[in-house]
Length: 512
Image (cartoon, rainbow, N blue to C red; front, side, top):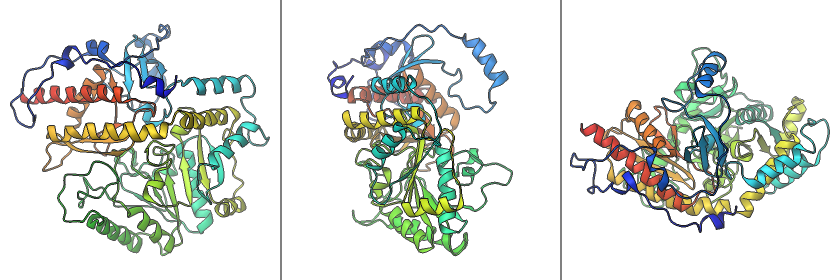
């Protein structure tokens, strides 16, 4: 089903409880109307979907809970008091075991790029499964070579050598080894708030509190201040590459950013005090994902990259969440900063949910690794993954999904930004393309995070009305809005009304 056809579907009508949510201009005061409880009964007012799920006929929910408790990781990762039991997916929609339909605005943690079970991707997977699943790279097979040619064509010179692996953590692991092998140095810098994986090696780069351990790890990794223009010490009204800026005051001209200069001084301080004179490299996400869609001041990465190279280090762009057109204006996030990395890592959207990842670098860096390590990945570049990866690239091009990310993403960002003016607990709305963060605060003056229990309830209310969004930030205070790139403005309108209704209901609870 093409994106163009789906954009022509008839308008939907927000009925029942969403329809009566008429309110005064601001909800930062106590003067509000009473509203009814918002539940899944609003599902009939969702945008249309031409897909009907099969009837769920597998394990009972109670049995699944028992199995999970007895045999799966005890780490509490599931969303919601009663975790959803999902059964099927179709494009931007998910269906649970009871047949309820949800609009997916988290994409399996920013992983479903072109839509759940996209017909073309499904067909490519089935065709390859009937032909050849696995050989490992000790043999040649055409899907791997075809994919390498397609992917390399999307990257600028000299980023033309591709190492295929299975996950973002594995890709960043390999990039760390590459940086150290090429530079012959050890120290690697990453931002506070960064997430680059949860493997023993990449945990040193990851600087989000819940992923830090009390035992030694991450030798040779050093964190530096994240140039967060909303929550950090400096920020203003021209900092971000985004249609929406912070509401912080500044005296900067549109082409000047004092906040950027001050954050660069902090970066220099890290280089001068916390690492060796010569370093191995610097990792950066073009926009931080797990930390809550945090954007840096314009030109910051360009200056930081130059400083790193002066110290003999290489620059690594972690495109695991930002790549493949999600940011709209460019195919890769690093291009939005006008920089050219030495190494690029990618995963998640590369396979639309299939386990697949890649590291792309220069011939010079690739050869330096080959001299020091006989690198090998049993499953990296397997025929099935590569066939799926090729289909994903074809769908992005054929359905103009990068352009859709730009147009629908900008529409979505500007629409959700209105909530910041309406609700005192919405501290910041930020992002680019189809990667948006909504940071919840106790009030706009203190910018202290909204308590997790309150954010949890808003999250639950969105789910109960049929909208699934993600969470991020060191205090889990930011909602991450990252739908599949096939999403339409019609569905953005629905998501906005649901999210706004959840905020209204929260303010009602507070008033009581």
